[in-house]
Structure formats: structure tokens, C-alpha cells
Length: 266
Image (tube, rainbow, N blue to C red; front, side):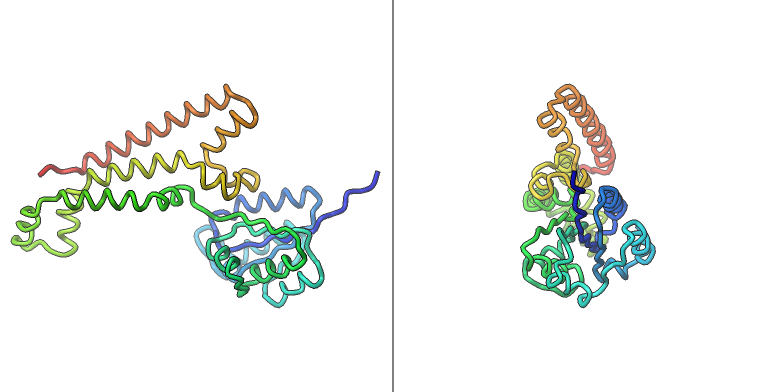
């Protein structure tokens, strides 16, 4: 029986630092499956230190996991194409900035040059978008939320605002002491819509990543769907649905309790 050919995987890192711990597990899994993994680092991944860790320590750890020296410059990344160094290139995490530049054909980082050079050989590139599901759900509905806020502002009586101005309340003080408290019922509604939407997030990660790599972008709703309708564990999927319902109900009640206390009548 012939031995399986070892694949060479280019693994490119960009600046979504909060995903690094999960990404390291993916790299370990690839190495464990007898793949040669060559790390590639963007300038941001090389230089930015943050609360999630030190850039130098991260680079050293990745190089230890892979046993390979990383690619750190555009000059080092360019030969990937002519030499056919990679079988597949994975960009994970792939920030929105990287995706936008990739779509526009811009190659001003080692990661983008690696992608351009690799695609010359008609070989696959896998993108793992670095998205925040809750933020994505909120942005998708931002027009709807702004309409509610606008309607809430219009319900604030003009005589209240005029009285506040006559009493010397203006600028930021008027916003914090008058407008915001009177707007709290609207804030309560929008918070409820945003939080419940985040828990129910399904369509965006399903369309963009399918929950991968290795389940790192899989929200709860998608996990329930796959459990019930892909693995056909209907009982287990139903149990997860009940737990999700109770969790959403508990969070909603806490949120309503906290915001209702700050509401004022006029």
C-alpha cells in the first residue's frame, strides 16, 4: 500500500487576535495529520501586542508547533507562486481588511502576496473570516434599530427640552440627564432585538464559513440545526433547543430588569 503524500499547507495569520487560541488548535490538528504547515504572518500579526498576548510569543509558539520558519515579508512570500511551494493556502483568521484588499488585488502584506502568488498556480485558497456574530447580526439590522431610535427621540416632548434649556441644561449634560433617561424604553427594545438576534445567529456564519474551521465559527443555532437535521439526533437537538430558549429567556429578563429600572416617566 502506497504511503499517503504529505501535503504542504500555507497557514496565514492576520490581526484578529481574539481568535488565536482556537486557530492554534487548528494548526496543531493539521500537523498531527502529517501535513507540512508553513506559517505566514501579516505585519499586524508580527508587531501588535494586545491583551490577548504578545506578538513575538505567538510567532515563536506557532513556529514551534509547525517546526517551520515563518514567512515575514512580501519578498519571502513572492516565490510561493513560481516555486509552487504550497498545495493549499489557509488564511485564518482573515480580517475584513484582508478580504477587501484581496478582492481589490492589493498585495501590500506578506499574507496578500502569498495569496496572489499561490493563486497563480490554480490551487485552492481557504478563507476563514474573522467575524463577530453578535456584531454582524446588529449591523445587518442597524437601519431598523436606527428607525426605532429616531422614533423614540421624536416622542420626547419639546416642552421638556425647552424647560431643561431654560434651567441651564445644555450640550452633553442635556443628553445624559434628559434625553437618555427618556429614551430608555427605546434602548430596552433595541437591546432585546440585538441580544435575541445574536443568540439566533445562523444565516451569516452558515453562508460564509459553514461553521468551520473545526467548528470555531459555529454559533449555537447552527450547532442545534446540525445536531437535529444533519446527524439526525432529534432528541439531543430538541434538548439543546430547550436550553437555548431558557438561556435567551433568562438573559432577556435580566436585561429588561436592568433597563426598566432606569426608565423615567414624563
